[in-house]
Length: 468
Image (tube, rainbow, N blue to C red; front, side):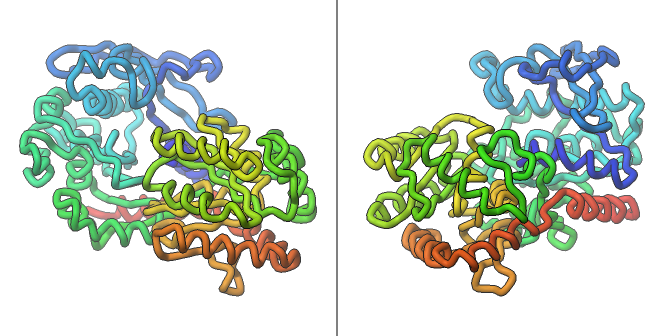
């Protein structure tokens, strides 16, 4: 979700007249030659008393005129995966240091590129401390003295604690890290997200309901106190999706393209998906799709229990995802036990994901919590009806079919019985082809493009600039 926002929002902001640019690490799998990237400069980045030569490359986001700066530094930024690099055994608190280094290098790169931004928009804990750095002794009286900061929380559960020496390596000290951000279990460790929240000029999150939910964080004392600072100004703006990229009328990866006017062709994708995954080819079965991270947050226990308890009902399940091994093993066992009813793929497969969006009847999201959610929006784009728990961004994006304008199915209680009851309710409507078709059409007509969200971000930027 974070990556989708950073990749999509700036393009739409440019269409509204802003000069929006992106700064990211040049990770190992980024092919500079394919991006036709040009080297702007090499700068020394002081981190922990040692200078690390860091190269700045400039390119355009593919298919746009949006400038992206890619920062290359072998030790800190450009080896391994985003969260696992191989240096963890060599360097204590490596992950925290990696993003502290990037946060400092990003500001220095903007200064080198002479891009004096009015607002620096940061995301989640990895870059939250950009807000602290801009207020620090090294930056507050120079190039960024008039720059304001916005921090977007995509998922409050993603936190990172690190020790004071790691923060000091980036030029941050206790002055910029109020005591309440220290970990209660270890007073020498600091919550980098809470510190960023305290120091940012404006805070927002990715749905109105989630914005309301996160102000009630009684189980997270440091974060809860930090969030209170922004309670009156906290804004929730829904994420959007790229409706050109996710388009059933032009999607080259699905078996049969279709549109609002040719929705009957969607059925070919269902039978094609059933064949591909070895399920019983039967149009009368309700095919429930899942594209998710295999984690407790996403309600995997509920999905596993629902599969086990509905084997005698006309339901089929297709699950694609990576994550915790215990969930992967349980799902794989079910697919072996019920091969005609359950298809499981535990790897990243963007093409299969498209086939699931296009081929399923309903799309399951029984999340324990959900800041916004993007997959339900993508599913609706393909005329696949969301079946979701009524929480966070799911509450804001899914309208239950009990309402005249409804195009989905919501349930409140976080348990398998509620999920199964809702599956049965959906199946009852699926048998009414006319009613189902109308719901599909409403889902496909719903506007979850970035155009609307970008205009909301523009208004938020304008209000932030008006503040003294």
